[in-house]
Amino acid sequence: MSAAVSATRRQQTVSAWIFLAVPVALFAVFLLLPVVMAVGLSLTDYAVIGDFEWVGLDNYARIAGDPIFWVAVRNTALYTVLYVPAGLVVALGTALLLNRSTRTARVFRTLFYIPVVSSTVATAAIWFWLLNPQYGLLNAVLGWVGIDGPAWLYESRWAMVAIVMMSVWAGFGANMIIYLGALQGVPGELVDAARVDGAGAFRVFWHVTRPAISRATFLILTLLLIAAFQVFDQAYVLTKGGPGNSTLTLVYYIYDRGFGRLEMGYASALSFVLFLVILVFSVANARITGRENDR
Amino acid sequence: MSAVTAGPVRTGPALATRPAPVSEKRPLTARSVVGKVVWTVAVVLISVTTVLPLVWTLSTSLKPEGEILSSYLQVVPDNPTLANYVALFTDGPFGRYLANSAVIALGGVATNLFFGGLAGYALAKLRFRGRGVVFSLFLGSMMVPGIITMVPTFLVLRRFPLVGGNDLFGEGGAGFINSYGAVLIPFAAGPFAVFFMRQFFQALPDELGDAARIDGASEFRIFWNIYLPLARAGLAVLGVLTFQAGWNSFLWPLIALNDPEMLTVQVGLAGYVNEYQTQYGPLLAGTILASLPVLLVFVVAQRYIIENFAHSGTK
Image 1 (cartoon, rainbow over the protein chains, first blue to last red):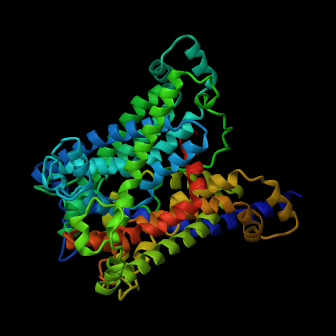
Image 2: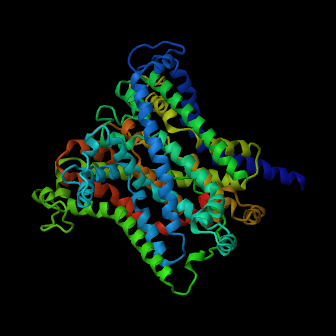
Image 3: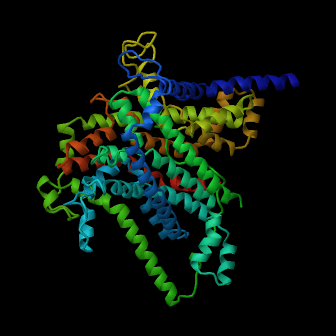
């Protein structure tokens, strides 16, 4: 009997590794190997054409003194500071609005979600037209309420703001859905009890709802932060980093160095710096938002 | 860079749907009427901001060139025309772009469903040493930002031995670069697909496989004939998410495919934004065509996608 069992076990082990072979091979060749290569490349001056040599930590020293790198850091930070809170608040606000199980609410849920389906490039093309200073819908609407809208993508002060607006519009639906799922888990008895005790809508939200959905908040903050630090498509399509480098983001800068100027060693070093930034913020987020979860 | 960048969707146990307190029938008071009006105005206004840009894009794409700027606020065109769409196909290789994107998106769906299903099944239902390690590796790899592997992955594909004119040492040719393989192969079995299918198979009972095993069925037959048909709903959701991610992906196709004949519809469209600075007609017609497949898939599958997404924040 035990021989039969171990034969089955052996057969299962062999089958399992055959079933896993392709994903494991791809993992090794397109994740493990590239990460190791990236470490190596970041210590060289590899530039595709010609010979290359080890330069030790020179690339990292060069980053510290690279003024355009710091411009990209500042732009990415500005984008993050605007995009993350706006994305969170809009997602939560719309989820609270739609947190009712009626047919109407479900229809609006779908309508709110529609921008998520389009690609970033299609969204950018749509907004390119919306943001047209003369013929764009946005400035037309602003004109009705007496505001003379700026030239958006053509003004360095407003270009990044425009990209943030577009990204919030394009992405909030997905996070709204996550919040809607979490809001289903808010204990109804607690909400009712707080109401009976005379708590207003805001106090109910702050003391009952907010703690009950803190796990979702943590997840959404993490997703928003990671997306914000890696913003690229919108800036590439709409402004090519301009005007005057005002929308040059970190990933755009890495792309430009690596594939525009083929400085792949330097680009690899830059990508490690970005990875480090993402890691630091993810850990900080886990410490701050995560601690609230434990309570 | 990863083929599937959608949020971490999990298949959890279905949540008991409890009507939210708001929807309970209450006596009609002045306060509740005002509340209902405010609510309706708010959701209608938000829907207008999410849907109107798309409607306006569609309407502009159907206007003749002379009408686009002169009656730019008019939603229904005076003389609707398909000229902008026709121009896309006659003036440039837009048809080719659409075909390239279709091959990449559908190819990605096929490989991710098959290999993701196989591997997810192995991790959920087969007992073997190293299962925990493999699973943690896949899970951990989803946290590595794509930007780190971007440059080296390009080099791996370019220097791949014996492909695309390369010799044994990866010299002499372009490897997989500028072929469908450059986009299909690295993302053929993404960790997300494996993770997603594992979660799905785990919810199915072990006994089905045990019974078939006693009857002497091979492990592949147990997977293919018993478990895979039961995972149809999961495969459908994964298929839709993978299709959307593949069709919409931008940065990697931009890097790996730069031959004009090989561009995807997203990369081609991005070029138009600069090329057609003042020609909004063809640009917005292209935008509609680039969005249509994912919008159609979404309309058909939206209930499953949204329900599935809703579980991700609750676990």
